[in-house]
Image 1: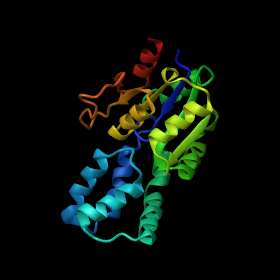
Image 2: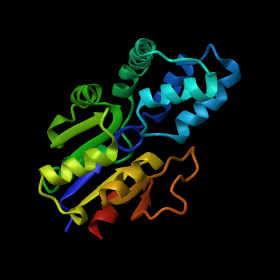
Image 3: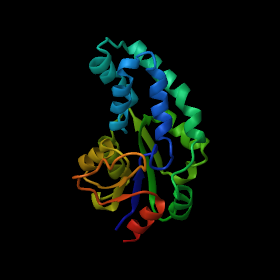
Image 4: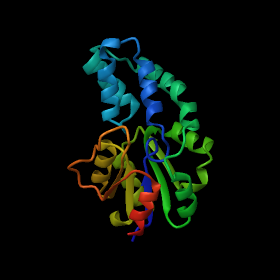
Length: 213
């Protein structure tokens, strides 16, 4: 019996994927030759920590050394470019209604690739605090966070599902042993082809149909 629904945030609850892509574009606009590759890497690795992305971008695309200090500065600029835009971004279709309708019936959690403090702040600013029993983010990885949620809330693996929109989300669910529902984006190809997902959805109306099953 389903007791808990765990959500990624960007691209699952909030239509903020483009916001993050635009932040990466601004961060690396001084590297026009590598920019398309960098943006493709970012989009192909939704759910990965921005700091892990910075490390890989500098190593594999820019072939430059990235100091911890510079990485922190990139993170600060990324937040500056994206924070308010995420707060202002619309919900995924039906998300607000779904959360209001079901938050007393299920335990709701967020597990995001966004730094945890920033994610908690965004949830608060968007007026979503009351819906979630816990809001979690990086530096801890998704598989670790999902496993922690199961343990702390005495949930069996078959009593929870994780709803995400990236391969990173799917891999986290697989590591924790929970079922995964993938959210698709109209502008991007289905990233879950060939993966063992419980379902793929476009919006929260379709998620509601799945949980009623």
